[in-house]
Amino acid sequence: MAPKYQKGPDLKRFMDKKLRLSLNGNRKVVGTLRGYDAFLNVVLEESFYENIQGSSGDITQEMLGTIVLRGNSIVQFESLDRLERLPVASTS
Image 1 (cartoon, helix red, strand yellow):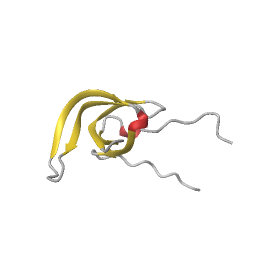
Image 2 (cartoon, helix red, strand yellow; image 1 turned 135 degrees about the vertical axis):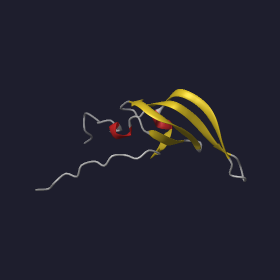
Image 3 (cartoon, one colour; image 1 turned 60 degrees about the vertical axis):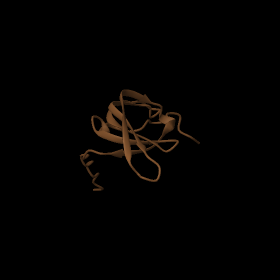
C-alpha cells in the first residue's frame, strides 16, 4: 500500500548552487537554484541554455535569465559547485 503523504524532493543542499539540468529532448540548462517544490518544479536564476553543435562538438550558450522549469521535464541534476557533506548517522 502506498503512503498517504508523499514526501517531496530534498534539494536544500543544492540551494544557491550552480547546477546543470538535463532535460528531456537532450537539452541542457545551467543556472543557480533559487527554489523548488514537491513536484520538482525548479526556479533558476542567471540561467543559460547549452546547445552542442552537431559533429564539431562546439557548445554555444543562450542566456535565459530567471526561469521556471517543470519537474516532469527534468531528467538529471548535476552540481557544478562543491556541496557540503551530509552528516553520517551513527548506528550506536
